[in-house]
Amino acid sequence: MIRDRDLIAALAETVRRFVRERLMPAEAQVEDENAIPQGIIDDMRSMGLFGMSIPEPYGGLGLTMEEEALVALELGYTSPAFRSVIGTNNGIGAQGIILDGTDAQKSYWLPRMASGEVVGSFALTEPDVGSDAASVKTTAVKDGDSYVLNGTKRYITNAPVADVFTVMARTGAAGAAGVSAFIVPADSPGLSLGPVDKKMGQRGTRTCDVMFDNCRIPSDALIGGREGQGFKTAMKVLNRGRLHIAAVCTGTAQRLCDESVAFARSRVQFGKPIAEHQLIQAMLADSATETFAGRSMVLEAARMFDAGERIIQQAASAKLFCSEMVGRVADRAVQIHGGAGYMQAYPVEHFYRDVRLFRLYEGTSQIQQLIIAREMLNA
Ligand code: COS
Image 1 (spheres, helix red, strand yellow):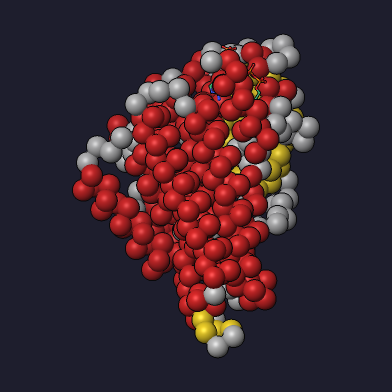
Image 2 (cartoon, helix red, strand yellow):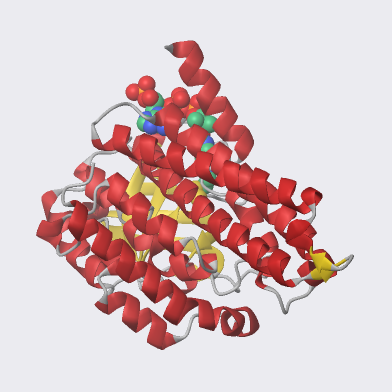
């Protein structure tokens, strides 16, 4: 749902200009330094991007899912690390509080996240728990007015810069019903971070382990004030997150199409630009068609989300299709670039590595297939 077409068109246009004038020129620097320049983070803060999906009463822009998807399509056009700076505050780091938090939790944390003063992060995955998210082993044991957390979370996006974590931990028996979600400030005693992970791509986005060693937090840190709701909170957060990721994938696919067209026009072989060779045209056409399909799918699923429909299947389908699709588009982009595509001097080289993650996080492609089939069979 788009509430005010002119307003959202203006926001998307502002983000498009920011991406082209500010972010794209910094892509090589981010690759080299594995960090986002502080000036860019400050600009994102002043544009309100940290709070684009946080409701207006809490200081955010309160974008609907369709509006958020339109912005994510723009942000996807550049290195994914830039989007990750604000990704957790709008997505998995804040949505648990937005969806299921108490009024006090929302009033305290959301304005701080919306302004970018506080960076949020989402801690579900563990060394032995990934796809089987209901099996979290990190424990939270009630002790008077506190909970005491013990365990390790793994590959946690933005953990090295996070001020607060949404942590899924076990308060009850085995399975989904024994999982609760907590808001854990990064400076809680007993919380420590592992070394920054060395990854295949998405340089500039930092992940690391988060360890809890008798980490004591007040009992009002329990999201929603009710035990046993954490798995459902996490799943609802991921429904929305998967649509967002699908939009980012599609934005990246558009960038790869544009890079491919530009290269194909300028590269001359057999006496003419390779764009005039039909085998190159076939790859361009396939990539453009798939990108259009992704865009259509994301926006339709986002509209359904805004209409309050059950979109578990559609979110999983969009994530599955768009993450696999951008992998194919990146592969063709490298192919069209030929040897140049293997060189770091051309952006398609890092996008080829960057997009690999989209098929893994927020649920692998195989998990999306399981979710889609379950929804079909249980209907
Ligand atoms: N949206 C809303 N609610 C959901 C849901 C979803 N997508 N998926 C499950 N639930 C609810 C169920 O309705 C059920 O509620 P009831 O107890 O009231 O019936 C509850 O959560 C437990 O669900 P279920 O029994 O289906 O749990 P499973 O262990 O079978 O879930 C999957 C299996 C694969 C769906 C789940 O573990 C999953 O999504 N894994 C991937 C996790 C992931 O994306 N990890 C990446 C790390 S985060 S970057």
